[in-house]
Image (spheres, rainbow, N blue to C red):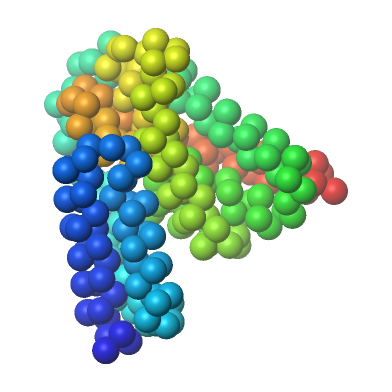
Length: 231
């Protein structure tokens, strides 16, 4: 039964529907449906002694559809095109600052924790959306599992901590909120941005796309620096 593709699909969808209801009931960032789904799926696999390969027979089907979800982000972008044009300099500047911060955190964290080059390379795509992150990890020959885990953790932490950050730095502008959430927390942050408002959702959608493109651009430089710094 567990080896059937239907099992992986039903388990994934069922866990998400359940955790989504929990989130809508409590509206607490700690009840993030993605994080809770991961925990719940992990518990099911562990307690029932189900091999990960069996689960991925079905979950892999859902993963194949991930790239299609990116196209949905074009809808809020189209609706807010005039605002995007009016704030283009601030948006691009904010996204570039976010990408630089992400790169510095990867290099700095790798140095402080004594990580080897392969693990550090696997963390490079941590701030871009999952479909792009998986493809980048494959191109780099990195550890795909670590890449996906780092992307999920980054997104969930961003959604959990954003109220504190916005309050601390007095961020009230919808454009700034959306740009920050999309740059720091990719699709997970964008789902929250859409809840905050259409402007926030549009800015976050743009931030996801540009963060991915800029990260792809600077990755060769990061890969050049990592082996030198981690010797």
